[in-house]
Amino acid sequence: MDGDVRVLVVDDDPDIAQFVRTVLSKAGMHAVACFDPLEALALAARDSFDAVVTDIEMPGMNGLEFLGRLRELQTDLPVAVMTAHASVDYAVEALRRNADEFMVKPVRRDDVVATVRRLVELGIARRATARHQTVLAIGAHPDDVELGIGGTLAAHRSAGDQVVILTLSRGARGGEAGDRMGESMAAAELIGARLFMEDLEDTRISEADPTVSIIERVVAQVQPTIVYTHSAHDRHQDHRAVHRAATVATRNVPTFACYQSPSATVDYRPTRFVSIDGFTDTKLALLACFGSQAGIRNYMQDDFVLATSRYWSRYGGGQHCEPLEVIREASAVVGAQSDAPAIPVQSSNLTERSGV
Image 1 (cartoon, one colour):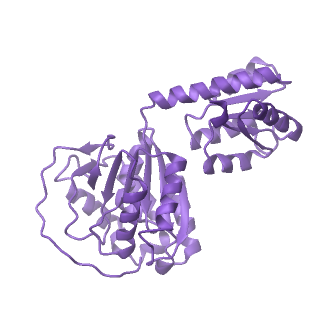
Image 2 (image 1 turned 90 degrees about the horizontal axis):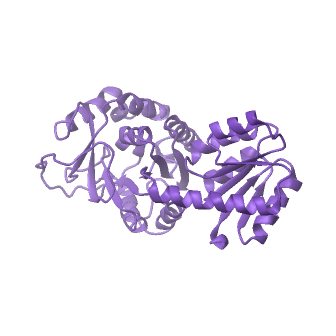
C-alpha cells in the first residue's frame, strides 16, 4: 500500500520538511515537501494526496489557518499537525480545526511513519463510508454552468457535497477573456467550488481531443460521482461538442445528466426537476458575478432566470426548479423529483453556429 501513498509535507523549515519527506520516502511513500503554506494550498487544489503533515508555526499563515483553508478544499483529507510546543492549548486548537493527529517536535522516524499510515487508513475508511457526492459541472463557456444549474450546485454545497466546475474556454467571442476568467473565479469562490479553467478556442471546441483528454484528466483528479454538462439537444456547436466529449470522458462516472442552456432546442427532454427553493438568491448572485454579460444577454436578467425556474416547477415541486436530462443515474441528485410527468414536445433538427 505504501508505494501508492502520496503525502504533502508542509513546514517553513526546509531541514524539517526534507527530514519528514526523506523518512516517508524511505518507507516507500511518495512525499512532496513544501515550505510555503500558500504554495501548499495551490498544490492541494491541483493534485491528489492521501495525507498531509503540516507544521503549526509558520510565517504568513500558521498551521491552524492553513488547516482551515485546506478543509475548505478537501473536507475529508487526513491531516497531522506538528509543533515544538507540547501544550494542551495547541492540541485542543488543532483538534478543533479537525486535525486528525498531533505530533510534538522533534518527531521520531518511527512515529512519523506510523502516524502517516494511520492517516492513510483513516482516509480509506472515510472514503468507504462517505455519503457526500463529488459533483463535476462541465461548461463550454464562462457562465454556462451557473446559468444552467447554479441553484443545483448551491444545493449540493449546502448538503456538504464537493463541487468542481470545469470551464473549457474563456469565452473570448462573448467578451474579454481575462474579465470572463475573473468572473468565473468569483462565481466559484461564492459557493466554495473548485474551478478548472481551460483555454480552448471559443466556438471551435472539438468533440474529440484535446477536449476529451482535458475532461479525462480532471475526472482522474477529482473522481466525481455526478457529472452535469450540456445537452446534445442544443443549437450551439460548442455545447454539442462538449456533450459528446463528456459522454466519452466520463463514461465510468455513475451519474450523468444534462442541464438546459438558452440555446437548447425543443428536443431537450428533462426527466428530473431539481427544486432550488432556498437557493434562487444564490443563483442570482452567481450570475451577478458575470457583469460583462449582464447588459448583452437578456437571459441573464433576474426576472428571466426566475421565470424560467418557476416554469419548470410545474413538473417538479416547490416554487422553482432546474431541469435535467438524466442519461444515467446511480447517485441521488440533490432535490430531484422522480415522479414528474413527461413533457410533450415537438421534434426539431435546428442547428446553427453561434458565438457565446
